[in-house]
Each structure stands twice: as structure tokens, then as C-alpha cells.
Image (cartoon, rainbow, N blue to C red; front, side, top):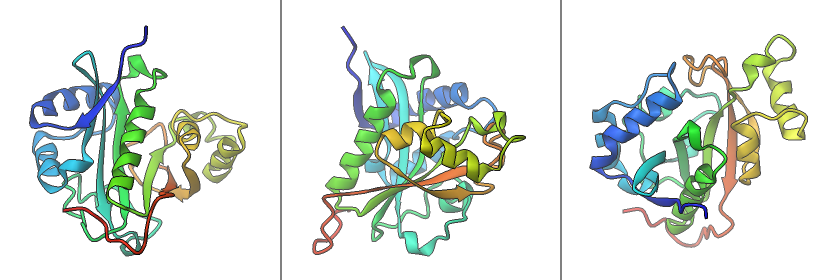
Length: 214
């Protein structure tokens, strides 16, 4: 019998486990610092989620709310998240921005990522936000970089000719591919710094009602 994945809001007591798991997932990319995660919880506690199975933390997702019109398609992770502090969080915005999501690499394919994305969609609907926007890594690209430009790689993933571990999953989750962002995370060697801009539109968004973030 499969074990149940529980999605809940991040707590201060989760911080050390989140940092350890992130180091395991992204050994070559700088991970969160404790003060960063504490500040995120102060800024927007509702947007910080963890996944746990049998009491063990197996995944996490971080997000903030922004006014997308204030940002260009070409932006960096450091700029839009204020270097991970989330000081760019804007409660008057209409866009839930997915800053980070990761799953224990030994448990990929067990539905944890889907559960975290479901948690984000619930958050978007709960607060009457218009959409979720994120920039996803393209970790499969380094294997094809000598064969094709990044735009063609991403299109082939969209067409189903190539499977990328991240973008293929996001498309399966109902997100739409919108283009390539350059130098998003320069330290991401697998993606060569590239990311895919993706969006999910909230079908329940009501423009006649206010957002409900407090």
C-alpha cells in the first residue's frame, strides 16, 4: 500500500531539514540559508509548503505573490526573489510566483511533486489569484547543447520528442510553456543557466472579487 503524502505549511522547525534536502537535490547550486527561510515565513507564510511521508520531510515548495507587469520576461531568480528574501512579495499582485520546488531524489516518481503542485494550485484558488508563473530548470539540456539551440530543445520537449525531467513534468501538470529565460540561475550547469517560463491560469479566478491575501 502506498504511503500518504501530506502537504502542509512550512514551520520554523522544518528549516534544517529543508536545507539538508536541498543540498542533496542541488549539490552544485547554492542552497537556502536559515535566515532566508525564516524571512520567507515572516513575509508570506501561506506560500511556503512542505511534503512529508510518515513524518519525514520529502519535498518543499516556496512561492511569493508579485505584480507580473512590474517584471520583464527576461529576469533572474535573484532579482525577482530579492536574493531569496522574498522582499519583492506584493500582496496586491495577482500572480503566485513559484520560486522553488524540490523532491527527495530517491523518491521521484512517487507523486510528491504532483502533490506540491496541487498545493500551489489550491493556494492560487484560495486567494483568488489569476495565475501561477514560474521559471523551471531545463536539466536535460546539457546533453543536447552541442546539437541544438535552447529554443529548439524546449520546443522538442513540448512536442514530445525529448523528455526533460522538469519541463515535461510541468507540462503534464497543466502548465503552458511561454519561452526561454536566459541567465536565470547562472550556477545551474545542467541547464546552462537557462529556464523555461511557464504559466498556469486559475480557471476559478474572478476579476470582480478582490484577492484574499492578508
